[in-house]
Image 1: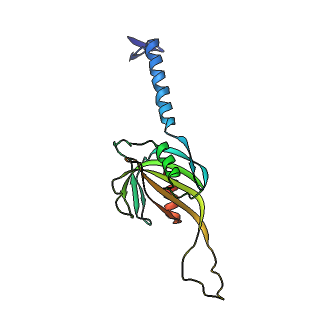
Image 2 (image 1 turned 90 degrees about the vertical axis):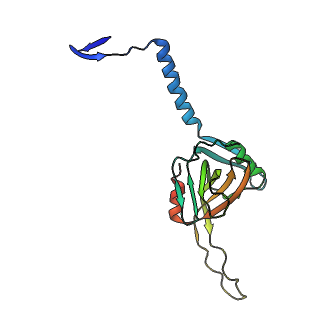
Image 3 (image 1 turned 180 degrees about the vertical axis):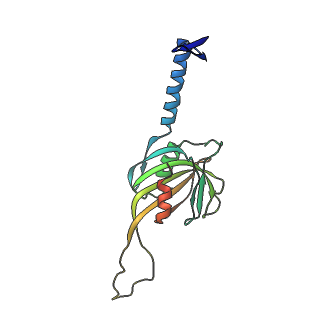
Length: 189
């Protein structure tokens, strides 16, 4: 069928029946809901802390290189995780595998492409990322009697716990206050 608008022929126009348009609308709504379903709130009980919460933000969407700590992460690819993010987060908390840093926690599914701990390269993992907490300097030589305490420097930090997404096991954790890497981690989502 050809259509004219203001006397000009605009060519063929596709007409859509009501059942087809309803199907298209339902598909658009489903796609929108699935996209929103990626983000979900996770809760677990950590024996020493109590109830802990995180937001699952879905799969990592771009590569992240943390050069100071020696880690790189990328999109997870096509491999499906064997456990859900809720299971990984709950087991991380209940089994005492994870270090609870405090602050705001977000969980991502990612592929570890470079790791400074060894043994995780290529691993599909849930990254349990904590930001918005403070760290302070530690270490140094012991203070001898009569010496003044060193000043304590407090700075913003982040921590990442790694949970194996293929076999429900903890893989390790890192923590740093490097400002450049903190900025990269805050832009992961």
